[in-house]
Length: 112
Image (cartoon, rainbow, N blue to C red):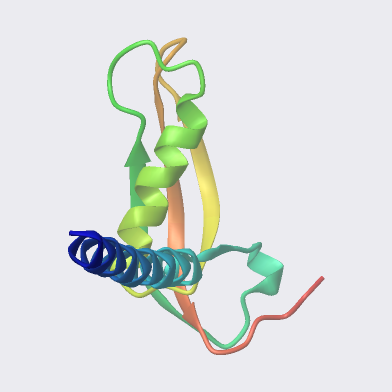
């Protein structure tokens, strides 16, 4: 009985190690894949991909800018953008708004 319990515990710990390793790899990949925020003066020798727009959604969102930025960053990430430049923040109501940004693919960026 004790040997069987030990085998089950060993299998569970093995599965737990594999799952945690996969999660760690996937989270680190997602962090690296997100476009970096840049300014127009930093964008040199970059390929313009497209304009992206992010909305905060409807409801009482006290931090609508963060929600709208996340939405725009997600769109830029789908385009394989490496950098994003914020262009406009549009306040719609006290709790809602949207952002507009340009997405770029850069091999190298100039630091100010």
